[in-house]
Length: 366
Image (cartoon, rainbow, N blue to C red; front, side, top):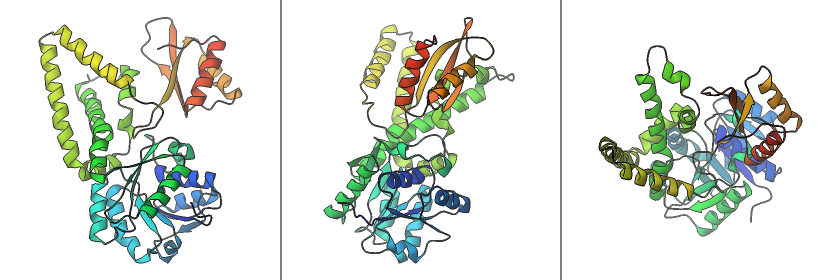
């Protein structure tokens, strides 16, 4: 059972750390939150928001009051912060992190003799945006939250942490940290590498007039959206999970080579088998839980290519209480009507907008 007088410490308070702190405060306002971040403006904003109770200018004995301490800095910095926080650890404190690579920090934990108090954590959620300013409690809702225990983790400590994860609205999943790193390499890290390669392919293949960039809208922007993620985060991931990423890239390169051979042979049956298999497996994915690459909630509607139409759509949604995350014309039109792309923060807003727009003569398009 979760302690009524719970105190949680955060070292780092960016997108995920801030979202976790918000989720905890939303569910249990009495939870006391202590934070340290090297960015004073972040601490000030979090305190003004009523999310942080004690904003520290350094890591010190104030963190000894914590029941949980979340290391929310980039991966390599979290490893360094283990040694920084060790002198102030209370035996009751559960120490955890939020990094998407677990082997590295587990090795550091073992070296420092902190295995009894450490449980690795990875909330598999987020957006391409970064920083506390973009944090939201809803980011954790229905997200898988991986827990990776050590050889000395007690059942009681693990169960208490599992309950805390559920309090935040996430779904705990307990797996070995080695397996976690292979899985995240496949479903998150390698896709980020591939996305970056696709973007750089267009950059390096484009003509001087930038025609490729100009028409790289719609599908291309969708499949490369994750290339807008933090370069620092991606650098740290590739440095700390390089073996798994490299192994899976070898497999991916084999797939590309086999597909190149099928295309070179103009093999219609082979192409059909490949794309049909991919479609069938992709359509079988469970869409009820959030994964490491957050889903986007986008609809596209037909609008007449006339001045003021975008403003009319935006106003219609606004007066009906629907918040828009992003809106813009898809610039690859072939007919007199344009296609308006509208992105929302969640599926409820998207479904409400779709019904409203269709009722007002703005049909959706695939």
